[in-house]
Image 1 (cartoon, rainbow, N blue to C red):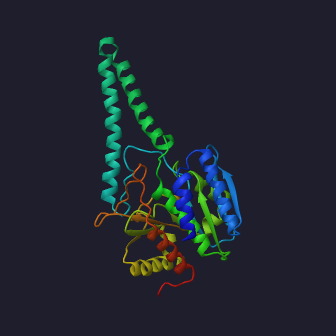
Image 2: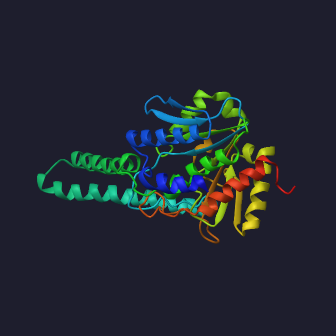
Length: 322
């Protein structure tokens, strides 16, 4: 609970936005001091060709059998949520299709309006068409830029302060296990760049280690556990699923599990051979994730985080009920 108290005071306060270089530097300074207070060795690893990422690694990633991870960077504020339905292919096609349609309507509308404005200029048809197409591309590029480098979202309780909190709580609960290391990835929101830099720096660990990623675990009553087929079907993956079933059952929570591509959850675990991930989903028949990437991302269900750590403890100490 001490960790949660510090998170409420710091990460959900002055450090909730971690998007710019300076904001990330403030967070890194804080988390290094936090690790030092626990006697945990921590290093900051820089990598990446075009976009520099700073990953914070706790423990020995080369020797660890298990890597417990989350991304610490936060996203831009969008006028609409990043609505996802990881367990439903129809839902994925519908929501992503609606997003694509919205982009097309905005871009097409800009091109049509510009075409009407150019009529009095008596431009050749080919030139007017070319100008309209450029307008469409500029609008689409602007929307993409808004998603990647737009104004910072002021609230990040679920995405992904919840994941950072889970990793820090796990590091405290499992202190002394030298076969476990912890990584906070940078630049997940820009396309999994931080985890890609980590995999390039630690290729053996990326292939060998069992990865457990926490991303958006504090807003939803159904606990999702997913990952690659190799990650879900290995001994560690099966033991983690059993631990989740037992702990969730004791707390009266629903569980959803499934390997990629049956379940699609786009986060850092996708870059690792034995990558798995946890998230929290809302809904009944249709399980979904919403509110993230908007100012409504304020739900921080501490019980979810405590359950995540309890599942990890059951996994590590093999208290799965098997």
